[in-house]
Amino acid sequence: MVVSCSKEDVLVPDNQPPNYEGIPLIKIQNFVNRLYIDLLAREPLDAEMAQSVQELQLAKLAPEARLKLVIQLQTDTAFIVGDTSYQRAYIQNLYNQAKARTMEGSSDGEIQQDAGIFLNAAYKDSLVGNWEGFVKNKSAAERLLTVIRGRSEFQFGQITYDRLFARCVNNSIYDKINMNTVNFVNATFDNLLWRYPTKAELLEGFNMIEYNLPGTIFGKLGTNKDDYVEILTNSREMFEGLIIWSYQQLLARRPTSEETGALLQDFAGHRDIRLIQQKILITDEYANF
Image 1 (cartoon, helix red, strand yellow):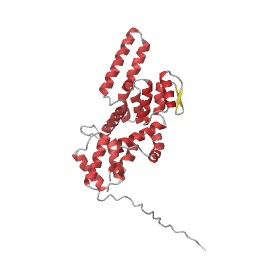
Image 2 (tube, one colour; image 1 turned 90 degrees about the vertical axis):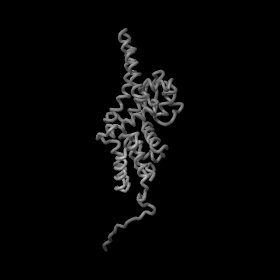
Image 3 (cartoon, one colour; image 1 turned 60 degrees about the vertical axis):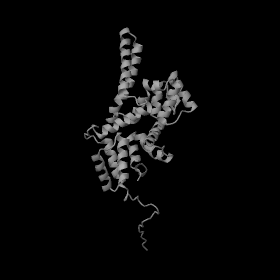
Image 4 (spheres, one colour; image 1 turned 30 degrees about the horizontal axis):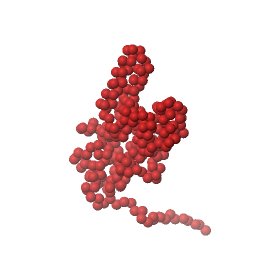
């Protein structure tokens, strides 16, 4: 006896794909407008709005069409009047947002000015043979200048977004904003990890920074301020913090534990903030469809 098995379609109730027909034009325009503001910090020009809306409508608002628009705004290097390119405007916006989160939005001019003060002090130290002061002031200037260089290095893929944040919290301007070591440790946890340190973490960080004593945070050993910043910004909690940051920026809410878990493992590997944003920006929640 021959027994054959036939393949049957399995129907899952209430699992119909979304129907985007009938979405009002104003909602589509609002979605495009919001994308431009969130990614480029400006509204679309009339021609940009018309083209984007047309392409989305032709694709019936499919997530793939939304993703195409998002990627274009994040990566397109074609010349655009006023922006140089979408990519440059996008990177500039991310750079400004990192400084706003950590350095109270200090302008590059302000950063350059502070760096110049340290370089001038270093020059004077060199004239009198104060080499310890020379090294200290040169180092302080360099920390500030690496923040400014971080914008172009981030644009050309030489550093990732977490490295830009590391530079934004390890300089004299951040120190002035968060005076004394206790405030510094509390601020870095809050700015980077979106939580405050436990008593044990605060003590370990304080001793590491204030006294150059060996300390352990997240299972990693450090003995100074640079070590502390490196441990924090290379931690899994930092990557989770960037996911939280993305949701707060784009949806004005924290991600659920399920949403964080779905993104965290991959992000720890690629560290590409664009991919996190793409996941959020193509959702119906963001589009309000």
